[in-house]
Image 1: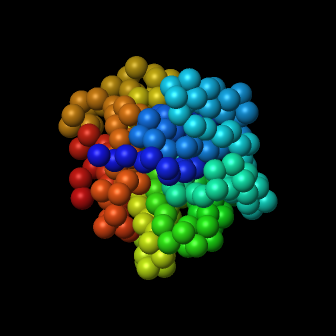
Image 2: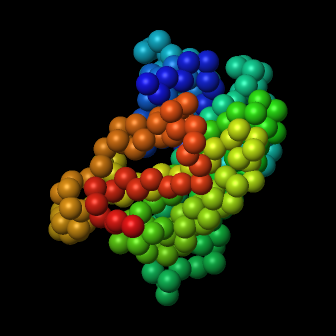
Length: 252
């Protein structure tokens, strides 16, 4: 199940060695997809590409600034030149900042929204023409538990607001492109076992974990597995939805 043979996937923010994006890229490649590894970090891009190709998969590394329309359009062009089609987009690239409303600056909120929401818009817009021509596409965007519970894990109010905007944008886009054979969904991870989590002071880390009924952070592979399902044929009748992956820290 969840085979992605002959599919081409773009995963933004997939250059970090220990981030969610790299695990998503490796998981989709393992399921048979050719993966466009897109990131600002060229060294990280190459590491992810090497990991995929060494495992027998296909990958293309592309330097991407998600906040630039020109950069997004160039990425799509390179992907089409190399693989001939684009079936899957995973909007994973994102940034965070821990700050209060009182201390936040206009530049702070603009910077976070530029990446987390406007960059996601530009990436999504860039692939739509190709997906519509194919009458097939899967777009999955990463929101956050912070968007639904008002923070409480990482990031400030601007992070929560930007990730809430991802949910609203995605639902609207899902309605817009449903008849084109394109599904649009979100995942909303809670605390995940990455370098950011490991950098927390012990007392603060314990407080966060105590608020999770399952008593542990999630693993990147658990996020990636859910995304692999959403971009598969088995999820063909799911669109406009978000899946919470948070160990019970927030329940709708």
